[in-house]
Length: 356
Image 1 (tube, rainbow, N blue to C red):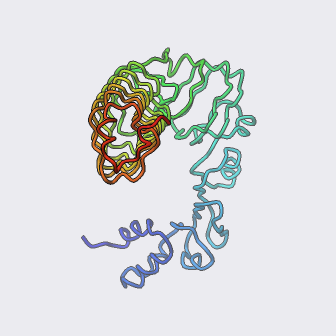
Image 2 (cartoon, helix red, strand yellow):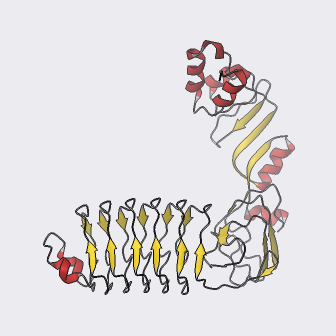
Image 3 (cartoon, rainbow, N blue to C red):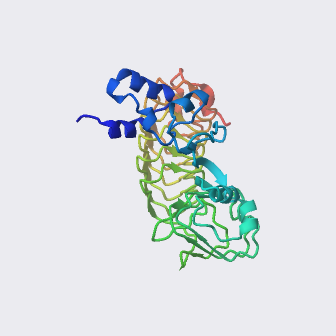
């Protein structure tokens, strides 16, 4: 396939800096003049590169610190960094475009509780202490909800989320897509027109669109017996499964590099777990109190075991200790069934078996 002017222009839109554009024109004679064909700047410009993009009509501003030019044929700006809603309205009056608009608490005080359809995110404490707010619609344009967004909304009982892609740490489970990563007010009763209730579950399949399980995500789900973690997950937060007392087994995918602190703390029914070679560290108290765990295979990728990691794993009678481990946390094997066997290995730290 022979690349023409249109194809090379599309490709060069993704160049990193002005040197890439210059090298193209110096290296391939027939693509000379490629820069002059651009009617917008695909990269931030300075005084030098502005002269090369001589024919731009629409000026793209990628960061707040970008140099802005109002010379020549430029008649419109496209702003990519986050702006608040009031700033967006000012830019709109001048014929400019804003790609990432945030509805802030100040915007809400000025323009009301109805979230405009142009908004892409809700800012920190946007609806904080809206005591009279009883219901709200979150449009499908929203991709991010800031911390404490609805804190103190004591009358909020109904919420409609057009683009339901969240799992709350309040663990509100429904038969349809589940809530993830926004904190729902404790008195919420209705989501998308349906009555809900907070409850434990006995089986959960995490959709492949999720990339992270946050802290305390499934903490205290006392009837959770089975869970599938997809390879899309790259991080498991602290206390993610702590006190899931009926969870019997779990496979950790190779996409995970670290198992957090208290991750499986007091998972008293956990009998087995497969730890992939991608794991380099086990957090402190990670398996503490897992007294049904009978054996575990630690891959040679492990170089650190956190303190009290396997403390009180009284049924743990078999465990391999790879030579790769250079750091043992205090009391990490205290109260384990394999203590006597491991004590014979003089190369291991003695305080692994002491109360910590």
